[in-house]
Every structure is written in structure tokens, then in C-alpha cells.
Image 1 (cartoon, rainbow, N blue to C red):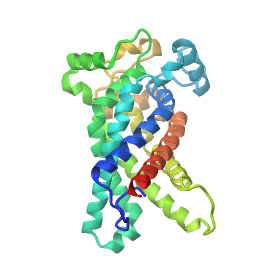
Image 2 (image 1 turned 90 degrees about the vertical axis):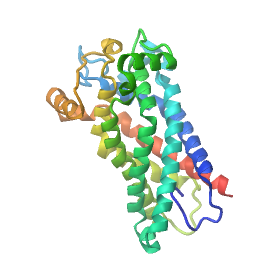
Image 3 (image 1 turned 60 degrees about the vertical axis):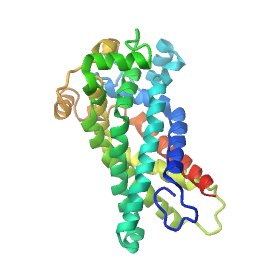
Image 4 (image 1 turned 180 degrees about the vertical axis):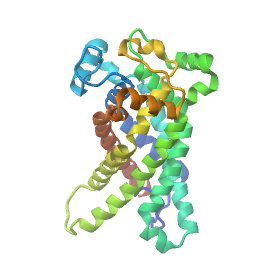
Length: 313
């Protein structure tokens, strides 16, 4: 079970929770990277995602076909190295801090409150853990987004080249572009995801039959997928704004992808997207993003729970 459990007979150390978070992040990233590439390509496309002469991508099937023809199958794993690093570091930071926060809640609040309102405490602790993780991995997230966003010819030849180029062009600030919308997005998303996961597990425990023979991994897989999908649907516009801000100053590598807009900041980006693309502009890439969110959260919680279970035996 995700979160501090006072009834656990063999408590795990912070290092063991970090290992579980790293494994879940690595496995999930390897499986779900293609969904991330599609999502980011759609989010960064200013032109409508419909069949037209000006639009680069018309939909999921057209995007998949275009990417395969123009860049090959490897393009679906563009930015995988920084993304994998991001996922591992994010998993470590998120789950380790979440376990710490939930333990502190158990130690400082009455036991009946922490048991009765477990989904709410997980919502609060999940928000804090998400902020810690987002701040930790933001430089990697910026590089991942730029690797995925660049077309041909490539602006960055390697991870080291990207670090040097961003440092020379923008300094430290360049590695933290989009930090405000990132934290604004991740706090409610992770809070909702952990809170909904706890709630879904409670509902599952109440509704399942005593003679159930379902696989042990199924509850975490189903509950994780449901929590990830619902949380992403609620906060999705913030994800679009974050991605748009992360590729500012990256115009040259985006020339083959259509129109490119300059944004002065978080609010300016929202205003310009609404003015130029309408409310639906804040939901570009929603379909692959929801699929990805469900798969990622389900896989993430499932792998984490299983690793924790194995280490606690």
C-alpha cells in the first residue's frame, strides 16, 4: 500500500522506498514514452489539430504515421535518456517524500482521523510530494521537452550539448523555464492522484467479494489507472501552458512544425492561447495524454506496490 502504514510488520527504510520509486519510474517511462512524444507534439502545435494545409498533425493516427515516415520508429523514444533520468529521480523524490509526509501525519494527528480521512491526508501529502519532485527534476523536464520538440535537423546532438547550449543561451534560468506552471500543475495533480488512488482502493476493498480470486496486482492497476486519468483531466490546461513555456527560445528547432508564438509568462500564455486557439487550445493532445495518464499511473502504482511488498516480506 502506498503511504505510511503503522500496521506494517516490517517497516522499510527511506532507501528502500527510494529504490521502489526508482524502479516504478524506470519501468513506467520505458513503457509509456511514445504516448509522451505524441502528447508533447500536440501540445506544442499552435495550428488546429485538424486536416488542413497549415497543420503539421491532424490527429493521433496521422501523427503516428507522419512521425514514422519522417523520423522513423526511434522518434517515439526521442528524449528518452533525459526522460528516463527524470522518471527515476522523480520517482525517488516523490515516493520518498510522500512516505515521510504521511508518516508525519500519522505521528501528529489522532489515529482515528488519519484512518477515517486517509484519502484527504493522501491528497495533501501527495501535493507536497509532487512539489518536491517537480522542483527536483525541472531541469531534466526542460531538456526532455526540447529533445522531443525538435525536428530535423536537430538543434541538440546529445544531452551534454543540450546542457551547454541552454546554459550559454539562458543560464540557470533556462533550466527552470515553466517552473511556475509545473508546480501549479503538479501540486493538484499529484494530490488528486494519491487521494483518488486511496479512495478507489477503499471502494475496491468494500465492494470486492471475500471469495474473490482476482490477481493481487489488479486493484493497484485499476485504481491507479482511474486516479491518473481523472487527475490529468482536471489539471490538463496547466500542462499545455507548461510545455509552451518550456520551448520558448527554441524557435529554430520548431520551424518545421508550423506557427510559433512568443509568451511573456504564465498568464500571457493562457491569454494568447485562448485568443488564438480558443478554449480547446488548452486541451490539445488530451486524447493521448489521458491514455498515457491512465497507463502511467496504473503501471506506476502497481510496480511500486509490488516492489514494496517484495522488500517487506
